[in-house]
Image (cartoon, rainbow, N blue to C red):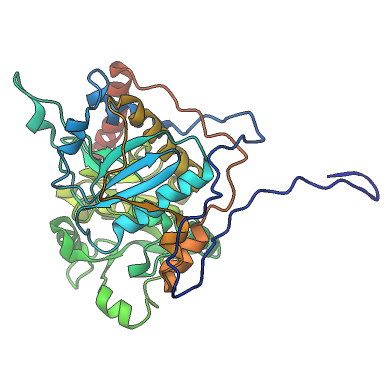
Amino acid sequence: MITAKGDHQKLPQKMEFPLNCTNSSTMPQTCPANYLTKYKPEESYAVACPEYFRWIHKDLWPWKSTGITRELMERTKHIAHFRLVIVNGKAYIEHYRRPFQTRDVGTIWGILQLLRLYPGKVPDLELMFYCNDRPVIMKSDYQGPNAVSPPPLFHYCGNDTSLDILFPDWSFWGWHEVNIRTWANTYQAIKERANDIAWKDRIPYAYWKGNPDVSPHRQDLMTCNATDEHDWDARLYAQNWAAESRQGFKASKLEDQCIHRYKIFVEGKAWSVSDKYILACGSMTLMMEPVYHDFFLRGMIPMEHYWPIRLNNKCRDIKFAVEWGNKHIKEAQAIGESGSTFMGENLKMKYVYDYMLHLLVEYAKLLKFKPEVPAGASEYCAETMACPTSGLFRINMEDSLVKSPSDSLPCTLPPPYDPRELQGFMERKRNITRLLIKKQ
């Protein structure tokens, strides 16, 4: 701090914990013994969390009155990909089966960064985690006069008929198999590229590029492509990931896909991690009626953050949205920028970690047993995960490594919705879409 000309006072040195790799082929990588277990932030004021954090209470509501027993948690062991145990600020993992690619590895890495960001704030807990696409804990299996309590299972997405507990997906820490960097780096690259092109100078069509083979909705979307007979104002491209990999992913950079005024979001097998990348562009997002949702999408509002598209009328709806936007450029741009701002402000990594923290804290309060490290579990830390890896996987880990504990407090968790308030919020979203349909 500079107090007067020529009078310098040293700023307190920030505590840092870089990777501590042994760099030895003969010595196994171990976890350092000097990890922080407690830390008091310098700031004493906490900001309010984004509104979508209120869904944490809703996701945990099935166990609010009964709590969670060990027997209940163990019921999903046959489908879970791994068990996470946190005891005294250390993470232990028991693996059961391998998911697609390295989803489990990315998720575990993110949890380790949470422990480094907020030493001592994550309570002792045990949970089961599922890494595949579709939800598996269905409400219908736990209803009726003789119904038993549903087992808690952490997962990336849910829908109106499921009870999976939603958690941020692996791609926030990068997705090296398809050459995607960490969310913080990718968002910055998308924004910089998008800012190079004035909105009015963007190509005045709706754009989508992806793998259509994973979903009937995506296959049906491809019928909206321009033909000699009709132009629905959509420019749709099938992504061949195998070919892209052989060519070094030169034609699939996310930051190069923000040159159109409108971008289409369509789900894959379930939800798709692409929602955040599409919304980040600042183009007006044409969101095909989602069946599934991730942890943050529930907080977004149609016609404020995106333009809703019906699944059963997609081609006509896309054409109507594009024609409307080209006639109302300022309004269309405002919707696109609002969605991008939501991504930049409400989905920055600080809030991703805060969401994880609050979810785990509230979950741990429900446990009616003492968490224990099972015999088949191994301790995990940043060193045991990152030091043996290489390539983009290692680069993403180093880019997302939390080197210092947070000097600010976690945001303040908002209260749960009361039933009438939640019903009003959902009805408001439905009414906005209904009014839009009437105008078409």
